Image (cartoon, rainbow, N blue to C red; front, side, top):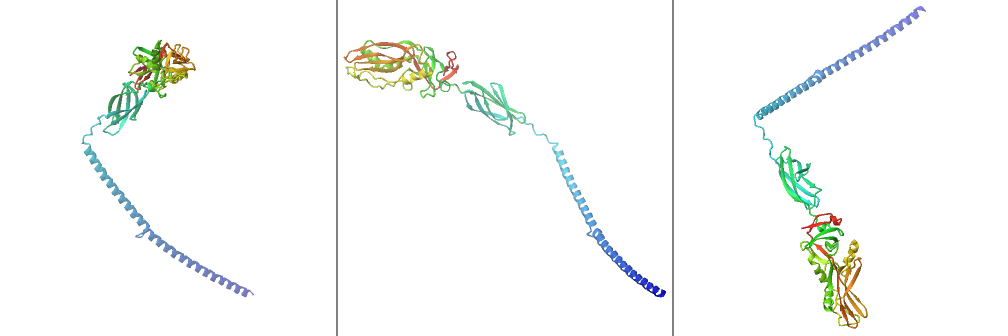
Length: 404
């Protein structure tokens, strides 16, 4: 029994030994293969790193090329710097360019002018091609310093001449200058006077206090009316019927002529108040025919409405009532079945419209005549170029004054 067990045990032992030997053989083969693979990989790696086209060789070549490029660039920069230093050395021996000492040339153009302003434009040229600044003077007083070549002087007096000077500076500080004169627009009767303003009129017989009856917006031009009468007693008519009839028929032209001695022809034309403002000689009423018939039919002129424009305007301005009676260059006829009254209109001292007859004719053929006396109140139509030289027109004490 013992022998059999031992024999069996020995057999198992040998079997295990064979298996172990076989496993050891396999392990040895694997080790050999691994070593071979490592050798191959090492050879490839060494060849890639150190071979003719290996990484280290290529890196070395790149390094050499970079060093060569830097060296060439440095040599080029050294060459350029050398040339620059040579040029600078040569230029240092040349004289410096002359300093800019040429002043700008200046011209002034006067533009729009008003009663209180003047606009100018400056044309300045300089060899440097640019103007740095401008100084603007009025009557030698500095008004402003600007870079702009245009300027407006404001706050000026109407109808006044001013001296204007401009200094132009270039970038080198050189200064050129120019002076000129310019005048503001004068105040004229057309652009200043307003209906109702107070004005002193320079009549040949002395200054006359007036009011503006019409201004430039009226369509009649600028017209003045005396503040009061220039005479309190101007007579129309006569006790002689023929003389009085002629005085009545010619009342408009007669009254216009009566005020002519007060006119200054340098400043104006003149008419009597109550005539047509823009046509003082208008007298187209025709002749009157009485209802009852008489030997005077068609010999005396008919009524007209010339007075109305002036009468209404004086009322609007509150200057109709002056405490005195004065003629209006306008006729009226008061005719009935038995008689006719041929009258000339006038404004009563109370300011009311009325009339007085110069001729009287009855249905029986009788006639009578009268003379009447009232004041004269001229109206002056100012010429367009007349200037306003002073005053503010707000009262008699500050009335506008006129000039040519």
